[in-house]
Length: 340
Ligand code: PHE
Image (cartoon, rainbow, N blue to C red; front, side, top):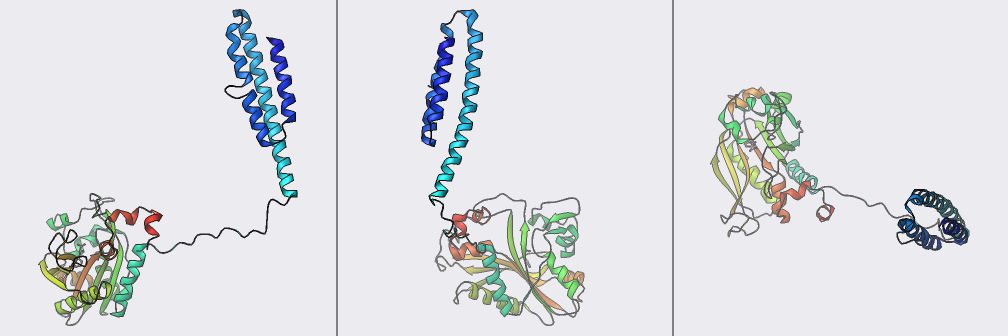
């Protein structure tokens, strides 16, 4: 047996020295070291030996295996080098070949939509004002006329960071920030930004989404100005013949409060799945800025008045581009994103 083992080793090393290409090396490896290779076979035959000879033979076979593996690695490296030198000499690598162009990205659908919204409001004289994502209880609720424990706070399921800090549930706290910064100037701004709500994620709602808030403060600003602004926006963003419907509503920071609906752009008001067969889809919450909020912003409600509105950004984009799942906006799936 020992003889056979020695002969096998010699034969294998000689064959290895003859293997001059990657293919030949692979064949060699299969033949000697592979699962069905000669050495493996040899190891299996240990059982045929008398018991006392088995350990020594097993060890010897393993030692041969280690030697052959090392020889194989060295030979592989040498052959690889030789092959590369040959390829280079033959000009197989063409260094003048132009590189692959780097793929260029584009703006996310949400950003594109936001920019369309900025353009439309810019033409109506609104500036863009950005407030912070992390807010205080004071700005997100209290200064918006919701003292601690006010039941209306339940309208916004909140991600709390600690007792005072939270992720803003809407862009409305920005109203107070602009007013405090701009007083005593008249104000016409939109406040875009991400909002967060502690809610179940479904095809219709995400726990993070963008809103655009609008705020106008001045003298003699009325509900008609608000309705006119919203109607004009809907017509420019969707189609010139859009119709707006106003319903009474409630928000603690506006008085009176309204909600604006638009005739459904998918069925043109006839009724479909998207508008739940009503012909109308909700566009935004809005109203006349509450006197308490004006006062908290530093503006005397006896002298000043204003309107405010707030709407989501992903939903209008869903409607405009006929997308059926809001979660796609945050999934980073290029197959989706490249379509816009
Ligand atoms: N902040 C309200 C919301 O998130 C919307 C709103 C904004 C309503 C401004 C009235 C005025 O639901």
